[in-house]
Length: 557
Image (cartoon, rainbow, N blue to C red; front, side, top):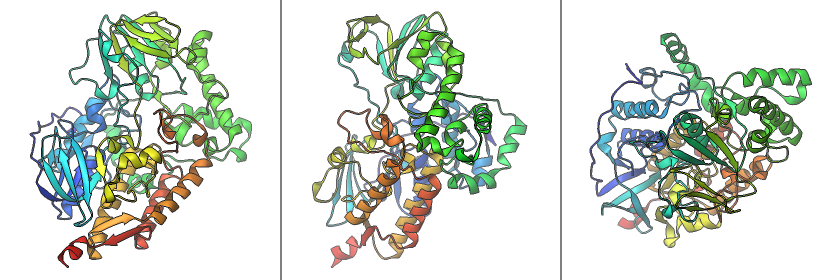
């Protein structure tokens, strides 16, 4: 049995085979499982990753305080009971190092590294319509001929690094949280700036405040936050969740958000006193339950949204007490509703601002103008002098990672150009005009934002695997969404999303954090269980939204 203290093996770089059945881009949660499944089908499959080892998100995001905010025992693979039970977590919400060790455990247990090329970046992929195959190029000068190209590149893996003018002029160290150095940064006794107060920024801020000389936090959009309760796990707790494997495997994939809990209360059925009791009870759980399992009406009904939002604001104000801090750090009525942005869990985050060495600087009405050699300059000319800048400024979510690869489909159509005009997919799994290109964590599926990631990534990779198997059994080797099929999914997605308050909010959920990005709710909002059902129905009915053909037979003819 392995646990959080196990030491991982060190990988070696394997060359990419010149001709394969399937190339998997990414060695995170989705990529590892996808590789395992396709290899089990007997396909010649290979994985590549820019990183030096497995982990995906949990390789790159090694900033101070990085940790789960999904309970560890549900953020796991559920396809193998022994794989699940032979790993033991140390606490409810473990940190990055422990999570990375878990992913090493998975890679070693399934013997995946022998079919992965690390330190390898895909630079270009071109579809050849005559033979129905992809020609893929790497930064190592390799060329791969693959029947299927599968992007397991992550939904938050394209960091917005070049965010402000003048960054190159800064005399100190400047890093994005998603590219935090393995060796860490020496912060003790330093003047440190953190730009951004989303989930990542919050974890950094609450962690580094005690060690730095001065911490200056630049706050643009105040966040609703929930306190985390993170008990340690001993043998009794481990036995408790491991004994629930079959229950979790059955229930988690069918809930609204892919967590173990779900919405059970209806606002209209309860009195004001009963609603308050529900909110208090769930708030005390110390998890994301208030967001994901209190009242579903918070996503649709502005009155309910405001009442629950005020409940959370009240809790935050009570902890801060200071009126100036409340003004800077607590969302105001009319800003946006609780749950329409990503909700962070935190540990004494608000109390961090009560420290003498921490300053919150509002840049809502006085934005950052540029980075200067001495530090951060605001629009009014004020310069905050610092030694280190930590950028927690987010990502080009959903579409960003694949769009940064030069991918050309039929007739040379570029994926980046297509998504630059309109963010469209079919089921968040494929894109019209790009045959045999599958994707996970992409736009218009729950995995783009509104799902416990392992839940949805397992479902998507399993669908892809079954689709390829069905394709072969039908005598075909090429599959592509039809224009009509894609139009139908986009219409359904938009009708579902536009009924929510998420669609009315500016955030990375709608792509509004990236200048020029077409606006669309990136994540399917109809629920994880519903999405799974629709994907299953698509397969069971013979893939009516897709066209299948046999390029090999046509070539021989």
